[in-house]
Amino acid sequence: MGEAKILIVEDEAPIREGLGKRLEQEGYRVVAVGTLREGLAALAGAPDLVILDRRLPDGEGLDVLAALRASERAGTRVIVLSARGLAEDRIAGLEGGADDYVTKPFNLRELLARVQAVLARGPREEEGSAARIEFGSFCLDVGGRRLLKGRKELPLSKLEFGLLHYLATNPGRAIDRKELLDRVWGYDRYPTTRTVDFHVLSLRKKIEQAGKKPRHLLTVQGVGYRFEP
Ligand code: CA
Image (cartoon, rainbow, N blue to C red; front, side, top):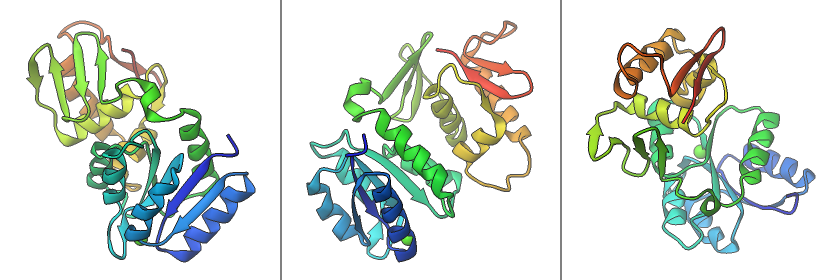
């Protein structure tokens, strides 16, 4: 895995160089560029992972993601760096097919752990159809941003979709409310973790049977929630 090729597209030189150096120390082959135009050109080098800043001097970083997903190398992993860390940003990237997010300013060690975790998953194709996640009698159509029960579409708000998508892509793992706030809402000073509970309740109304114990969105006492397909 140390031989993996990583493309960094980030216009802030200290971040680009610091991150590049650190990844090279870990044994990765690194190409680092500072503009959207160079990022698009560097995709020809067939990186295994792209670390992508959203705000680039000549455009929107997600354009690199879109170009990649539309290309023959659609399986390439992508971690998006987001300066704003707002839910809107995250959800936009998630719809665009990012594999992970890191909010700036980030902790280098945490980013390295995310890089390792994302690369360990291999190329996207091998996960099967990640564009659809099936559980019980439901199907979460990630590309279409819809929740389906049979042919019926159940309306979800943006945050409900983001929350369900994050939980469903981490099945069987107890996830605490803070992680959900960080990963779905992405706003460090969100007033209260009760917001998570509120959205879980509204999701349960849509995917669980009234009056019965939840089958998919389980409460983990003292921690948060666990998703069971
Ligand atoms: Ca930037």
